[in-house]
Length: 477
Image 1 (cartoon, one colour):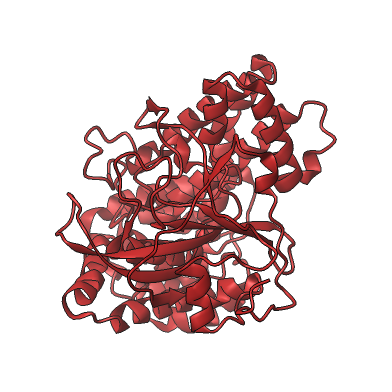
Image 2 (tube, helix red, strand yellow; image 1 turned 45 degrees about the vertical axis):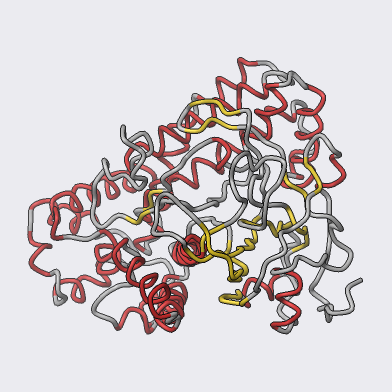
C-alpha cells in the first residue's frame, strides 16, 4: 500500500479487469515526464471514489507519475481492441496512448468505475504515434465532460489534467505545442471494438469470457438469462439509444463515432473534434476531416445503429443471429422513446404519455428550425425550461421577437397540459441570468488562446465554475 496515500473510508479498490488475462491487455509503463504541473483536479468526482483526501503532491504521484493506488492494479494495462474507423475496419489499434490504471467502487451506488488515461505514453498499440496528448486536447476534454454532465448526458468525467513539460509536434495545430496527461473516470472502457477484436481472430471462447465478465460486472441483473449474449446486447442497445437521444437533446456532435469509441455501458467518452450546435442544423459536422458528413449531428442515430450492427456481428460467434437481428430492429423505437424522454428532461417537464410527448418534441424541433440562424440551440432550452412556467420570462427576454411565429404558437399550445418536473429548479441562481451557459467553438478557442499565449488559467477555471452553476440549476442527473 502506498505510503503517500491517506486512504479514505470511501476508497474501495476492486481490480477486476486483470482477471480476464493476457488476451485482453498488455502491461505497460507510463512515460517519465519532464514536469508534472497540476492543472485540474475534479474533487467532486474524487470524493465519489474516496480519493479526495489526496494532497496535490500525492495526486501528482498517482496521476502524473502513475504510482499504483493501494490494493489496485499494480502495472497499468493497455487494453486490446479493434474497430471500424469511419466504417473502415482497423485491426492495428488498441490503447495507443493510454491505459487502464485502476478500478474502484463508487461510494453509495457500488458501481465499478475505471480510472484510465490519455496521453500517458507509448504502448504496443501506438503504431507511429508518440503516445502523448496535447494540453489543448486535455483542456477541451475537461470542458466537454463538464458541459455534458451539466446537460444530463452520460459521460466519462475528466478526473485529472497534468501538464507534462513536453513540446509536441502536431499536424493539426500550431507546433510545438504543450503536452499533458489526462485521467478520466468512467463506468467502463470495454468497447464494441473489444468484441470485434476477438471475432476477428475467431475466438469465440474469448468473446464468451468477455460476455460473462460484462454481465457480472455491469449488468448483474442478467446473470440468470438463458441467453446471456443476447440479453447483454439488448441492454447495450437500450443504453446506446438513450445515449444518442441525450446527445441530440444536448445539441452535441461527438465527431468520431467509431466502434472503438462506443462502450458497453452507454457512456460518451474520448472527445476529439467534438462540437456543440450553435443552432439547429442536422448537417452540422464536428470534425474537419469528416468530408462526407458521416457523423454529422442528424446522422448520429444512424451511426449508433451501424455500430450496434457490428457488435451484433461479433456476438454471432456465441449466439444465434436471428434474435440479435430482431433486437436490432427495435433500435428505432428505442431511440425515438429516448429522444422524447431526453427532450422533456431538457425542458424540465413531466411526461404526458408517449403520443403527446412525441407531438411536443416534434413541435420543439420545428420551432428551433423556424428560429433559423437567429435562434441558438442552448438559449431555446434555457428560455423554455419549465414550459409555460417560464413563458413570461421567455417573452420578456432577449429572444422574445423570435417566439412569435407560427411554429412557436403550436409549440406553446402543446405546452399547455405539461407540468414542470421539480418546479423548484426555476428558483436556482442560474435562471436569474439573461443568457445561458454555452460551450461553442469560438469560446473554447479563446479560452485556449489565453492559456497558450499568456499561461492565463483563470478564464478556464471561471468557465468551469459557470458550468457547475448550470449543472446545479438544471439538476438533470
